[in-house]
Amino acid sequence: MATINFGGVPETVITRDEFPLQKALDLLKDETIAVIGYGVQGPGQALNMRDNGFHVIVGQRAGTPSWDRAIKDGWVPGESLFSIEEAAEKGTIICNLLSDAGQIALWPTLQKYLTPGKTLYFSHGFGITFNDQTGIVPAQDIDVILVAPKGSGTSLRRLFVAGGGLNSSFAVFQDATGKAYEKAIAMGIGVGSGYLFETDFKKEVYSDLTGERGVLMGALAGIIEAQYQVLRQRGHSPSEAFNETVEELTQSLVPLVGENGMDWMFGNCSVTAQRGALDWKGKFRDATLPVLNDLYDSVASGAEARRTIERGSTPNYRSELEAELKEVRDSELWQTGATVRELRSRTSENVEA
Picture 1 (cartoon, one colour):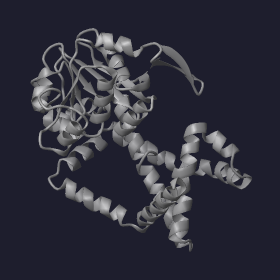
Picture 2 (picture 1 turned 60 degrees about the vertical axis):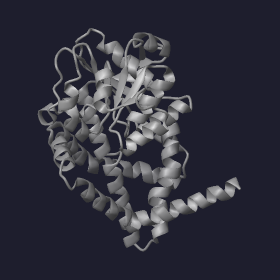
Picture 3 (picture 1 turned 90 degrees about the vertical axis):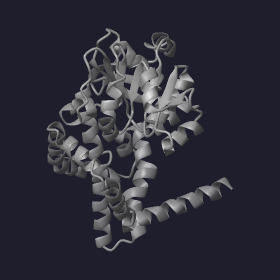
Picture 4 (picture 1 turned 45 degrees about the vertical axis):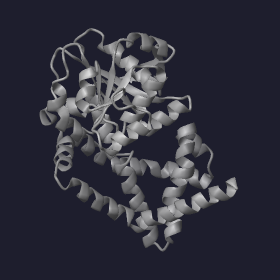
C-alpha cells in the first residue's frame, strides 16, 4: 500500500508497485473468472483480464448483439463463451456486469450457482446497497467484492491497450473465505486499474449516482442548454452559441483542465477570462450547492434507485427513452453540434491529406 496526499488529505491506495500483476495472477491461478454480461463494462474487463493471463470465460445470451460482439472479440462458443447459466456454473468468481435492471431480473437464476466459497463480483454497488428494492441478498457463505473503474468499459480498454490504466475503487461487502480483500485487489489489478482506492458499496453507489446526475451528465447537460438558450435569445447565431458553449469546452478547456488543473487553466488565459471565471465561479457554486445537496439526499434515501427501477422495468421504457433522446437529438442545440462535428471531421481529413 502507498499513502498519497490528495489535496492535503493522506489516503491509502494500492498501486501496481505494491501489488504487481504477477502477485494477482498467483493469487487467482486456480480461479475461473466468469464475466456475466458483455455490454458496457463486460468487454473491457474481460479482454483486459484475458490479455493479462487470467482464466476468463464469458456468459451471455446466445443470439444477441452482445453474443455476436463477444465472438468478434475472440471468445469461442463452448470454450470461452457460454450461456449465462453455464458460465455461472463453471465460474468460481462470478462477475455480475449486467445492467442494474438485468441484475435484478437475473438474480433468482444466478443465486443458484453461488455455491459456498465462490466469489460474487460487482462493478457497481447498486444491487447490494438497495437490496430492499432489488432483492439481491447473497448467502453468507460466499465472498462479495467490488471493483469499480472510474470510467466506461471502452475507456478502460483503450487505456489498457495504450499501456496505461483507469483508476478504480474497490470494496469488500462480505468476506466468507478470509481472502476477499486480496481477491478484490487482484481483480482490480487484473482488469487494468492504474491505482485502487478503498471504499464501501454504499459510498461507491452514492457518489456514482450523484456524479452522473450532477456534474458528469445531468448538471453539465442542463447548464449547456441554459447558456445556449441565453445566447440564442440575445441574438447570437446557432454556431456561435454552440462554439462558445460546447465546442471550446470539449475540444480545448476540458482536456487542458484534465492535464494541468483548473488553476493552470486560470493562469493561462486572458485577464478578461481570468477575472470573469474567478468572479463568477462562486455564484455558480452557491447556486448549485442546494440542488446537489437535494440530489445527494434523494440518492441516500433510495428515491433515485426506486425511480430507476420503476422506470427501467416498464414495458415501454425503450420506446419512451428513444422519444426522449430524439427530442434532445433533434433540438437546435445538438443539431448544430452535429454540423460542427462534421466540419471538425472534414478539417481533420484535410490536415491528414
